[in-house]
Image (cartoon, rainbow, N blue to C red; front, side, top):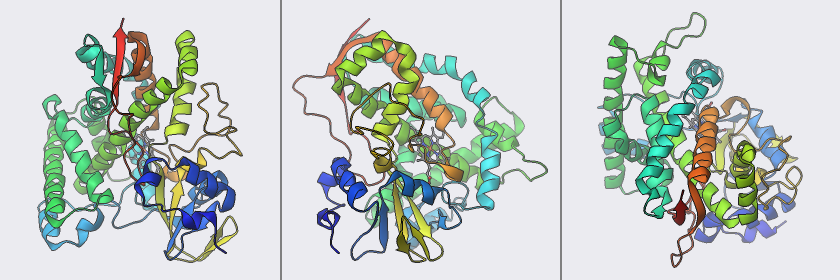
Length: 412
Ligand code: HEM
């Protein structure tokens, strides 16, 4: 039976930039939708996304292309990668029991006490970024704030020198482009060189910490042990460091810029936050629900099964759409409305759920709360810069974020 969904081109630029109306059709018509002519199932409904997340032994995260994309099939790139360390399946692309070991080890470096201890430091970083543009009365918020903040935070945690922070963005983008963009062989090779450069750079930082431990996450990762397990070896450490760098950068950056645009677009809600800053943590949850920077994630069925009553043969790829689940009318009434006092007794899925729940969620929540608090304390009358084209979302199936965001304001 054909459905209204069959008429939607999920690869079109229009869908990729503004997908919400299409997903609403998906939730109504086919919460679990087998794409015609493809071995691919898109999952739109909250209950069905959650069910798949909670069955990791049926819906596997293993995906040989997920870390370096199609470049693993290029002889030229393989030669380049041979000068570095092998990619190890550690977290995002791993299943139990191996995933369980890595998660326990890495969680040791991400305790609430460690994240809470960073708060004063985060305020300092946020203020120094705002200091650089406050007097001008305007800025390009993506480049001047939303990108550098998470890059600086993760760089410090991974022991990357301050002078090398701009390289964090280059390295993160290299990984993301290898996975998510159609690249020529030359372009792949350039990114592959950057991957190997990152590995050698991090290897040197790891060696430094072996002889001179510091109070940072890299030292914690180096020393992490669970029971009497062996510590992480070099390739494992590099793989974990790589995932922490890549997973935390674009996501947090997209949240900052998309979140600020949502506030600008909703002046009545913004006025409520200014009147009562205590709601900022709940506002951040609502922004996470509405923005959902990781729009969806892959899983592969490893056995014949079913989801939401739809038969799923072994080998089928599924795309679990967190973006759609987070606007499921069943749990989030009037889901397209931004409401800072929304009740989150049913939690949103922006950080996923189950064994792959985001490791960095406490850190990024803290970054977001501190950043929005200081922005609202220091900048009044924030608006889109007049005469500039309305900001647009990057056309990507996996990530949701803005290219740029030109804002004007009055600094206090
Ligand atoms: C707003 C910011 C962020 C969002 C929206 C986000 C979202 C996500 C999502 C949806 C997943 C789960 C994917 C799945 O189920 O397959 C995930 C996993 C992960 N995230 Fe985040 N993330 C954010 C920030 C961060 C930060 C700051 C870090 C590190 C410092 C980080 C590190 C990771 C890692 C290592 C995983 C893999 C966990 C596993 O597979 O067990 N993320 N993230």
